Length: 297
Image (cartoon, rainbow, N blue to C red):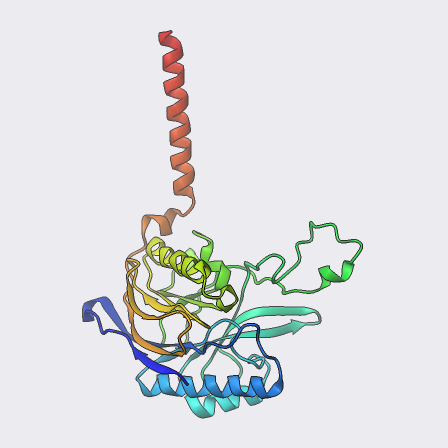
């Protein structure tokens, strides 16, 4: 099952009553899709989830596409999960089938054998990896345009989950899109990022991705928790400080309190309009200086 990692308690005034368990199962890349391997992965997820709950977690978070089964539609899988985790909310990465040729990379929230409480579909898909851009002329091989995932509708806030404050889900690559990850009309209390960076290997990739996601916490003034298949999994406060961390290529469960949110930052209110206004101000200043020099000459 790997090691159980307990994050530092921190200052009581800077944390909430929510305690998260982040699973880092460290499944191999490339994945093994044989049935024995899928069953072994499933048992590992169940054992790690149970360990997190026994350590006091009020929610358990799985990485991107961690579930070997389609949790939204697989009643038997949800029943097996509930037998181990009870009514503790599970935030799980799982693929799903929304219709004929309609495949989604999703985050599923469940707290028992009944249908999921919430479903979020990744909407910023990776070109060439999760879909084939339609602007590419592939008339010779049209079948390539028929595969891939269908994007979701955009940023969401998942609320009304028993025992959990409202949160914003982001999946993998979505974390790099500054100013585009939060539904500011329904501001959440925290951000949940699930990802699988194993295909990067031990390179700069996972570290750069982790650095990017820390910036999102600072920009929004919100705590962020990150569950990554092979790392780096972490709890990050609204100032970008890492309060608990599972290192790269470690297998384990990280249990830590969720930091408290800060008031909405200027960036959260204005987003990408801030760099636009600064650019316009610099442009106007440059034109004014140039015009003044022209008059002086």
